[in-house]
Image (cartoon, rainbow, N blue to C red; front, top):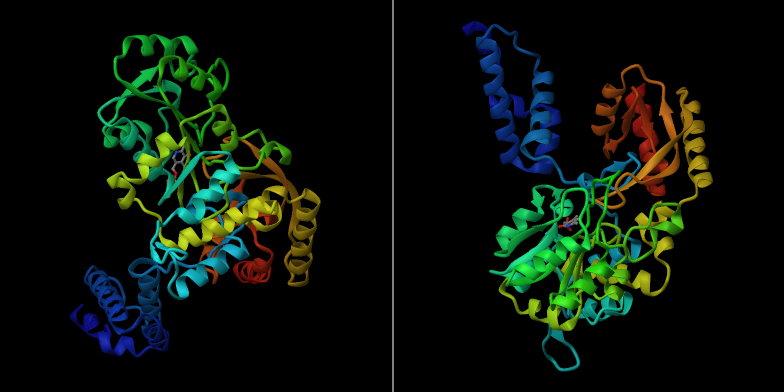
Length: 456
Ligand SMILES: *Cc1c(COP(=O)(O)O)cnc(C)c1O
């Protein structure tokens, strides 16, 4: 055994392998040495347990895999062929060309981020987008923070700390990533008051509690986001909640989650509540995300009545949750698409939602022709795309999918994820499926090359 242990190359020896030298040029010396050390330590253990010493090239490949998959996995572009348009694991909304240009410009040099140019003195970070948000939503006031979870936390802390907040038991939801309404409520210092039942909550349920509870700061409505209650159900709509709130002198907060500015029912989907509807109904504060159905960067947006929104700007949490300048630049550019009425042409997720099936079919067939020339027989089949991102749960769009006739779909899917750039596909009924709807046109060549390599 000690003989075999001596066959294991030294760290320096293994570092000389071309595959590792290539990585040194990119990652620098230190990380690659660590990868080699840890790999050799693992191999030594295996050899002590009776394994053979792998050839040097295999050792180098193992160190590279350890480096790239475990030590320093790169944050990098991925091709989304899953058909889930707002895919939280894949970075939610891709940005429009104008938003990308705005990010580049904001990153390149200085900006008037917190500088009032006409006055030549300190300005406010989110002045740039607040007016636009008011214009688009009809709200009196607006505020932008880091993300919607932060917006909800800030609104609850600012408006209800130490006081009661009413919410239907059917809306005590977990959005994902550990964001649970009851937990956020607890962290904000507000006291949760549950109303009604899981499946049915009526106006009278709210009224009973409003008559009994002495110190209610808010009535909260939270969007279900990622699930649907079907069957014997009842919920009180936003307009009726506002009516109730007016009667009892309690403001209404609406956590819309996704926060659409456009009507999804125009695209064959169910109607997702819009921000304008909540504002119009008279909600005091409305919270939504920047990177869900808005189609912009990560951000948390609060719009509503000035009397409730403006004090939140001065809350200490607002500083802790502030939006970064690159996201602000992208958000402003995204909002301009709505102002110019070009959202469905310019914002990638809306272009994907609005894409006609005939166009998707043409793309899938073009992919099929390309693969056939490479000796791979694929088929084009009917399927469904989903919107995702905690919006429109259970709703799908008809699409056309490229189906690949492979005996080992999991193996090919793994190979696709290892491609450069990585491709994430979908497996259904033992079939490997790719949905052109979520693949950007400029990604097609790379996708087809990755497919060819993974299959042959
Ligand atoms: C997604 C979502 C959130 C969290 O928004 P982030 O922007 O991801 O922080 C909060 N509430 C609801 C209802 C959501 O759907």
